Amino acid sequence: MRGAALVSKRLQKGQKLPTLSDVARRAEVSTATVSRYLKSDDSIKPALRERVSRAITELDYVPHGAARALASRRSHTIGAIIPALDNHIFAVAAQSMQHHLDPAGYTLLLTNTDYDPERELNQLRSMIQRGLDGVLLIGQQHTASVYELLAQQRIPYLNAWVFDPRSNHPTLGFDNAEGARRVTRYLLDLGHRHIAMIAGQQHGNDRAAQRVQGVREALAERDLSLPAKLFREVPYTIAAARSAYFDLHQTAPEVTAVICGNDILAMGVLFECQRLGVEVPRDLSITGYDDIDIVGDMTPALTTVHVPARTMGRRAAESLLQQVNGEPIAQPIRLDADLVVRDSCAPPRQTA
Image 1 (cartoon, one colour):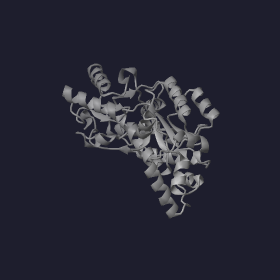
Image 2: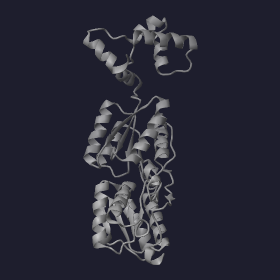
Image 3: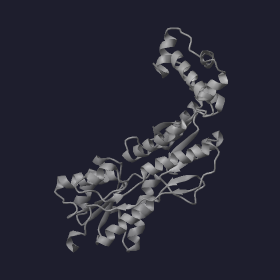
Image 4: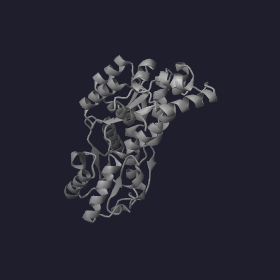
């Protein structure tokens, strides 16, 4: 038995927990050698390493994480505060991040904000109280209190999912507006002129706002606009997207293409089209944003913008570890968000 369960059981029985000194005596080495072993010091000779390992196993010794953190001034914990745990694209990035933190002996502490700035600040405070060496934030739209707290505590951080060379903060990501411009231009080149958008809620979400901005800019290049009649702003749920498209279908039947703020919204529109008997892409073209795993296997497969979530998780882990170790990092870090053309788009029916 290991870890917290072992410690709890021994405490319930009134047993004294083994200490680092106990391990040193059992292994017949110094406490410094045991400490170096726990820090994965490669300079320890194999014979000594085997003796310490055997002593730890025989005594069921569990290193006290808080004490080690105090001694080294490191918690070996990296935090990630994301907007939504149920968003697949964030889950992919977090998994990649943990995979690349593991070899360095770091644990990922994950929490979500539900796009609430005050909740984000409270969660950051809680993480810092538990011990935090660095933290990943999503976007740049954070309260001044968040940045002040990070500066006060001298905690390295990284704003992901955004690329902004003008920012005073370290950023890692892609140009959300450019991705939206690419997908809009693609639809325009197919011949679409009656284009609607179902976007995610923009409050507290600079990525959603940038994607709306990109669509408007690409339309303006062709002397078109996105009037209120053709714009819906909804939560990132399938049900909300279905309801939004149902309303568009009733009030703006001239629409031949719908740009969605992410793939979940696009899936909702596709499902509602199936219910209404609207054939995709013959009657309506649909685009998404993110390129989550499932959308390439749908019928029709979704045209979308690929967000490099796995690469972002890896680069975030590397950058934060560099900052924790006092190493300089190149800033900002730009990744590509490419258009992925599949089967959900076609020229509008009247000009096909």
